[in-house]
Length: 472
Ligand code: GLU
Image 1 (cartoon, rainbow, N blue to C red):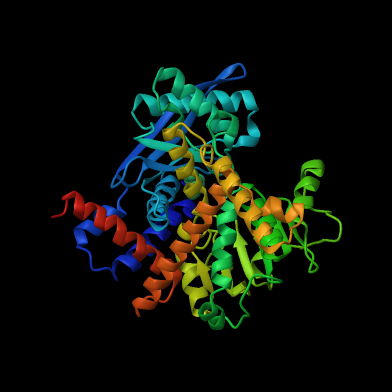
Image 2 (image 1 turned 135 degrees about the horizontal axis):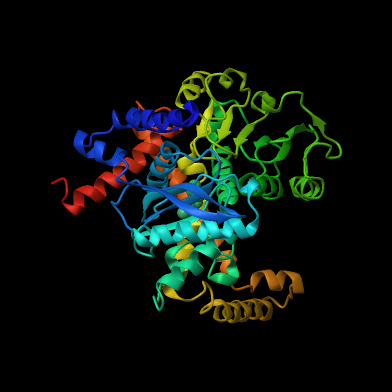
């Protein structure tokens, strides 16, 4: 186990302790909330080429105060037990903050996705699923995985298929995993959900006069500059949505192959296409490459967005940070030690458990869709459209004026699934923002966003335990 990952779990625990010390709940209850309830460590053989390989994998269920437990599955050569424990813990707090009624969990398979072809990855994923089924670690009411770093809807389809084969006839089988392809009982808007949620979180903060006054900035997202580390699913959608819907300017992007900058702004959608074709972001027209890849941390911008892995902003480089706002699109990108340095500098850190909660929020919608066996909007879309049309017709008749066809189609449109998903996600992120801000303004001792977010979720989880009667 490398030192870096061990400290990720310690970092989460340190942050938890900091908040727990300010909470009024009984010590024993807080200790129970902080602990990882079940840790399943497995080793299984997979035939690769002419030989066999022993695959190391995990599933951690952090808290059972609500069921099912929920959280993604990570495929990475850096996976280890403590990393998965840290990630599972964050899922509990994350779900509580956005009022998603699940306990936290996370899975990890220690493989480098670059070293296996699709067929081999399928074998690994299916075998991992069989292990989970055998130990009762997966199911619509038990534990529901989703994508994370190194996995996508493709792996989720393999998981669902394997589960369904073993649980033939189970009516709700589709709800055993989320983040599935839309053709396989997935939901519109899930792929973009984490990035879109990050945008809503940033937007709410930027529209908050009091918070902007603290960092000496104008309100609004328009024209604000951002730097993104990581162009995976989360970084890509965060970048495109922040610029398209928020009018923000992406002035630098960092990836494994290097960091590129363009003060005039980088078109992220075009950059993604470029990278697909050339295999690298370096050389993208109009941009310059920084000498040191890791220098993205010190770029002067309004919002710094780490959207890759944990511990990226740490004790060693925290002093370089010039941004006044950090939005944690990744899980655990700022270590506890780095946070101390940054808070002293007056940096606002929107914590992972809030900023990136859009993914699990839409996973919750997908799970609901699967359990209800009907797509959102199917019943009411046409009915609404007819009612809106009648209204517009009436207004036209009463005023004697008519509106353009374009205006008419906007006004009379019924909601599709994706519209409802986005609306639900936006509502969720705004609600959670207000809950965290209220906590921060109510408790004078709480000055940072992570502690406030922790306290919001600790209250909810503690309340669940108390009303269950486990801690009378
Ligand atoms: N892996 C994502 C996260 O870290 C999504 C989890 C889910 O949808 O269950 O929040």
